Length: 207
Image (cartoon, rainbow, N blue to C red; front, top):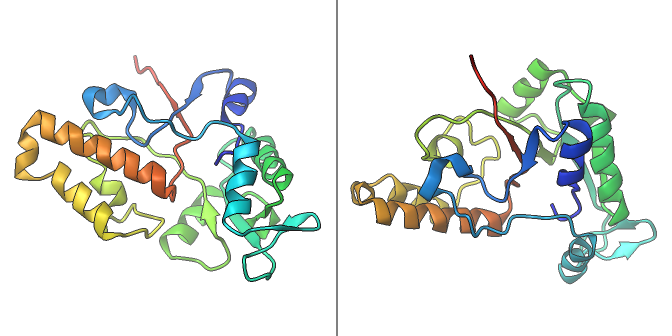
């Protein structure tokens, strides 16, 4: 995440109409948005330090696993529009700078329907993916990140995540201050776990 130059990409390829976000709860949700969330700003030095500290040392051009075995990572991404190709080639270049051997699934961007099919059916052969979605008017993230949620495409489940999601949608959460506190705790937890990296948001106007 620290190796991704998201801000530069937004300015170059999206005409500044998209903007980087520090958390998975967007600012239009008011109090529920944690304005103190740090997120992941571009910092190659920090990216290298984290990998070194975790034991992923460089062996030649690429980093290896702590056990010395090669580390190869496949990224699943869809070809939603023509700008996606240069954007993902840029991110691959960034990751290669820190010694991560990351390449595209089947060495190319995937047609959207095929991409969705692979995600929903746990297709083998990829380690991470990118995605985008619209949000509803209710700020609860349970429909995207809870244990039984169909849209929890990462299949990530922990007792702490379940606890926080349940608390923010509980009877006690009718107390606004309590619910805001739980939303902020969840955002901090998600940024710490970093299994989903918040990237960009955009506004749309409908006449």
